[in-house]
Figure (cartoon, one colour):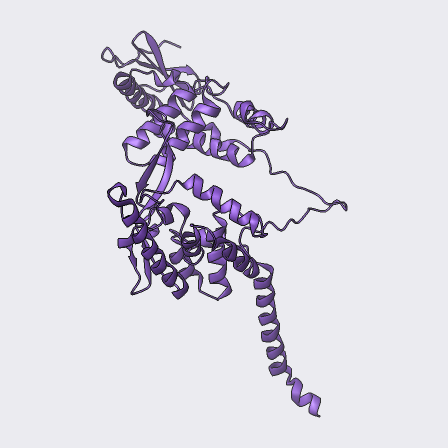
Length: 433
């Protein structure tokens, strides 16, 4: 078979050829390094001219050359740790990452990806097996030694899932940009959750309460009344606002005459990898449009906020010109924002002293949702009040309910069933006969 002449192309465009019968290779040299792209193909045989696979490879090669010229990095040789950092910055520049999310991503990458085996691997050469082995290694020995209080070195499966989601998303973007032909992370099988068994070999059904029961709500609030955080904790329990939304709340966003709270901002401490400090407080809009919401205030909350406002005025007069008036509702004594971490620590002290279930601070929000469900508020309204972007978020997050709610539902079902049986079989009339 005579050798066919390849079409001539301009210098700098590289070359395209069949490396094997079923694989087309595109190759070019930029800054002394070779760029490669590959396309799976059917055997060309004796066909004349470029095949569609060769044309596709040429388009991919052109994009790869352009990207290399713009960034100075050869994409086919780019390591995973380099690409992930670049991908995060690209998303930040496109305004697709909030400051806290950006900081969290950088922290995960620097802690778990940089200088790891997969981090040093070129993205075009990364394999499914390497990723799965990496996750297993992280599961068993992934914790940072200096933070350990015991010999346990296992990293939580939740953190591993976050790392995997980050790798998968970054590689999806690499596929979209024709930097790689496939995303190996899409086919990775993550480790399974560990299941605990009881003495009979059955799956142990642990009641993991994430909200206060009716009696616990009373006990917690009674203990909280002695704290300067009482107004904030009471408001959170009866509005379901997140801690960041509560600490960012301004008086201008409260209408105590109408009994309404308008969520417009949230306060977060975010990581700043490139800044002079490791973290900083940032006030910004809610994550989604649904987060901007209006919540009705029960009279008990309105009355407490009125008292809280009067006490705050006295404090302001006491501080005089040193008072930082930022219109913040739940501020510290000098009027500035309250540190979320300090607020959380104080909550745990109150919770522990009140003898209630060991829920976290976010559990107060769960408690609000549970109270709505107890009072038979429809799911759509619950979703709106919680600030969820979709009702499915509400269903998936709060599919659990307290036993007393379940019992009440079953009791009502029993009454309904009994009535239906009586109507169908006319039990009363049969008894009389």
